[in-house]
Amino acid sequence: MKLLRSERFPAFLLLGAAALGLVVANLPFGHDVIDWSHLHIGPAAIGLDLSISHWVADFLLAIFFFGVAVELQFELTRGQLNSISKAMRPAIAAAGGVIVPIIAYLLIAGGPETADGWPIPTATDIAFALGVLAMFGKGLPTKVRVFLLALAIIDDIVGILFIAFLFTSDLDLVSLFIGLALVAAFGVLSRFRSRSNTAVVVPLMIVIALVAWAFIFLAGIHATLAGVMLGLVIRQDEGMHARHALEPWINGLILPIFAFFSALVAIPQVALDELSPALWGIVVALPVGKIIGITLFGWLSMFIGRKKGEKPQMSVADILPAAALGGIGFTVSLLLSRLAFSDNVVADEAVLGVLIGSLISLVVSAVLLSRRAAHYRKLGTPVEPDPSQH
Image (cartoon, rainbow, N blue to C red; front, side, top):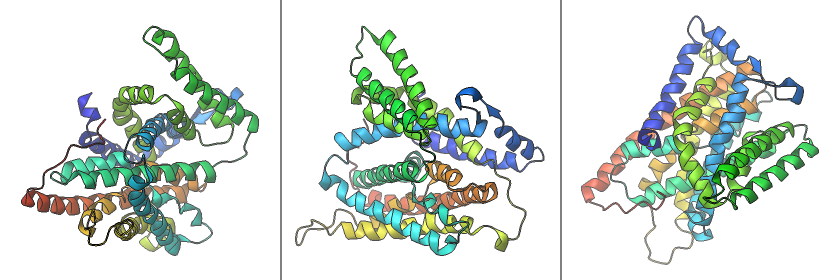
């Protein structure tokens, strides 16, 4: 379990699962596996007849988003984003990491068939980015890690908002009202759990969470948002306890399964100039757009609120590795790829774009991190205790 709670191993596991999915999809029996992933299971009578791949993306990933939301709740109340002054600089940098990739994507793939993919390159995968940081950033001062963590969390907020407002269809207000009432009941119940009633309250909370997920799904809202809502309303100490218990399952099972199914894409047997502009837009927007946007806006943010003659908290050389890590979109970008395109061919090529763009960002960030970490080790800069480890 300790291995699955680390930062390095889950990143390897996630990358390996995605690589396995891509390889399997392109073996002779790959089409059979892809067809199997589209097999529908579940109670059709109540509207929960989903394909296996949709169960993975809509249900399993909701558990991942629950953990993300618990982390957000902590950071917004007691962590790195609990005040305007703390959140301002990473928020400005994150804005650049959203705006510039969108512009880059639309310049390349702004046509009517692919323009809807503009949210895809805006995401940053926290787990993956921190895994790469742990592998190649030994010796970096804590301020760089804190900046990256805050940046990735804000990116997650943006991704969640995109999912909520862009991919909601045929809203059923009755189901939504019931779902929200159940979410509220979940939050209230979490505040009444004690050692004496755990055996009753915890199973009841799980049942309420499952039913809330079903009603949020039936309301026409993407079901991962049920996980977000539940993670935001749960009592904080209960949420952190639940997140700790779920972390090995999320890192060792849920995210690798999602990565495998998302990467089940047959590589198109076409010339490069016949590939969808969506692929090229994402391949450019993730590594290049993120680096330019985060570095530029992050550098500008260092001048805000700075006293005359005071040195910036971080230099461009510090921001650059974090900006490169921001281009590792992976989990949320893969989800956005499937949500943005109803055309399966374009969606598959968008997934390939995410995998390629994230891999480029991984390699570039590894090089930049290694060089910057070596610089700090040479200077003998002490590494402060990491306040984000809780």
